[in-house]
Amino acid sequence: MKVNALLVSALLVSSGIAIWGIIDPQGLGSVSATVVAIQFESRGWFIMLEASALLLLAIYLALSKYGSIRIGPDDSAPEFSTPTWIAMLFAAGMGVGLLFFGASEPLTHFSVIREFSPDPKAASQAIFVTYLNWGFHAWAIYGVVGLIVAFFAFRRERSLLLSAPLLDVYGNKRWTRAMAWLFDFLSVVAIAVGLAGSLAMGVFQIQTGLAGVLEIPNSYTLTAVIFIAMCIAFLIPLRRDLGEGMSKLSNLAMCIAIALLIYLLVLGPTSFVMNSIVSGFGRYVFNVVPAGFSTTEFFDQTLSSWFQDWTLNYMIWWLAWSPFVGIFIARISRGRTIREFLTGVIIAPTLFSIFWFGVFGGIGVFDVLQGNGQLLEVNSESLDATTFALLQQFPLQYVTQIATIAAAFLFVVTSVVSAGFTLAMIGTGGNENPTPGIRTIWGVVLGALGLAMIIVNDVSLVRSIIALSAIAFVFIVPILVICLLKALSSEASK
Image 1 (tube, rainbow, N blue to C red):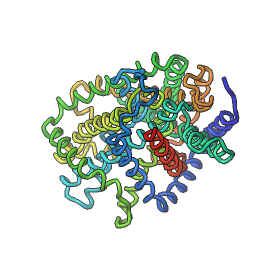
Image 2: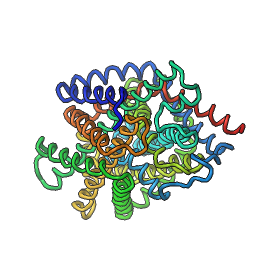
Image 3: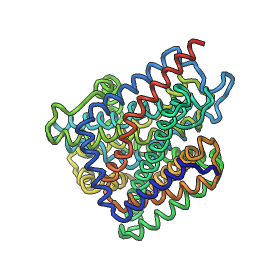
Image 4: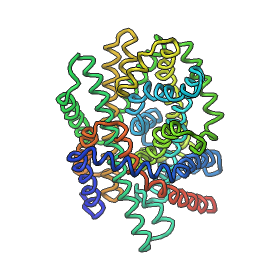
């Protein structure tokens, strides 16, 4: 295990945040919420501009002459099959979030928008906003950052670190070394904190589901049992080869999720849901670019707060996860062309997300439009209970609820495994196969951070903590993009 200043500093800071959250969870949450609110007020326009610019850049690179450049030597071949590759990147990037927000987010947007629009139009706009938050922009952020890391690691034979592009393009100088160290350090903190928030939300949802299925109190004891089981579950694959652990778990999680999706589509209001998906997809495709430039200059206070709490928060949330997902995607993407990489990373997960929210969100708004306010009422009280309330309206509710719990559990485990692997790579100077020992250490740190987020016990505060960890990347990612464009230009001139 290679121990260096970056590794020690990152472990100390990550552990310090965990200790702060355990000792004073509300203090950590309130400080994060205050700082993030200030940043959103002053720099919200820049965050939306950057997210949209990354999407346009991804489209340009995929369609340009650079699209045929292979990530690695010209004769290199992909390490994983395309289905496994997509399942792994998807499980790392969003898995548990889809289960948590599948029904709850569209209903939340609907409850806000209906104050300004008739219910049918509010339902349509709620689905559109959900697509905007989880679609092309999110995966473009992941895709571009992942491409940058992969290109310099495998094409230019640098390390799997965010610092590699800077050192490659501008040379090994004093200022580049200092900035490179800062890039890697901040990426570690953002990955650790961002993943911990996802772990906490997974525990919240699993806890709510188990309490309902087993008909037991939603207690601290249940939380502790779930948390301990989850820690054991992700520490075991962290000590095994990536192909043996992560790929099998992610494939299983995706199979369960797809089966659940098909079940609800067939037994639910199929015609309404499919009409909603088709029309919603059309509206999204033709309006996604202008919507990505939305800001709050003409919003009243209610809509402005809603926009910041959701769309703006998501964009910076994807930036927070971009070092983790980007480095991990880079690690599993050697041998693919830039066009193949960007197409797979951006289009496939976005289409699945649209279908997912179209089914879960479509069933949710259908329930409201039919005059039944049960789901909306549950959603206003507890976001993590909404999916289970929806499943209770279908046959075999116990089976589907258990399947949802299992999928959420597996998605959290695969996220932690991939994050632990990524953090270990960064902490050991970009080693593609860090030792099980260092991966286990990071697994323990991630568990401690997750415990801190669980103790905070407030989804909105958890999201603020994640957003705070990502603010620096609003400025780091454009620098990395400049490095990529310079490198591609020199590549094309050879």
